[in-house]
Length: 246
Image 1 (cartoon, rainbow, N blue to C red):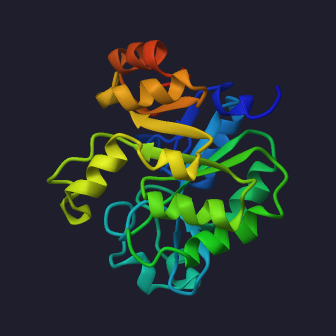
Image 2 (cartoon, rainbow, N blue to C red):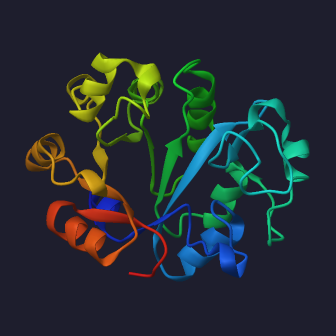
């Protein structure tokens, strides 16, 4: 493979190859090991803990996945490690531990879980950590300000925009203009992302189709059904999947 062909060379396991019923929880060491065993690329989520470390965890709170409750940002890594996942022996990891586990064996696509405010501290820390990693890795976010900041901090980093039809209810806090620009990928002209990751439920759509025609790889999330797979095969270059094994 040359350039950034690795972005679309294989299916991408959404939050790792997880199966909660089997005790394999999303964004954990077990889920990542499963994805690696199948030679899938891995998508994962990153956010800041209260002590400034980058943890691999999706939700803003511990409530859904663990036996504890409370906002992640209020807790240090030692406190977060004490949060036991439901039906699993895994613990919350910091990003460096995941990079050590993956060890360049499969590509990584890391999503910045932005809170849409206070952009900068998380992005700076992610850039610092990835500067020591030699494997195939890309960073993406729904938050265009986050991606723009990453582009400034590390011009050579492989970056993507995550997008969908930004609804007025789900994204009310963003305002209509920002929702419009994000839906139609208008920030791509200034940020110059290396790829797009668009909601499979909203394909086909004009903006991602244009992006693909001008050479930007198009990933699509989250493929869970045969119909989703058909849409992904027709309109995208690679799929971010969960709930089955491609």
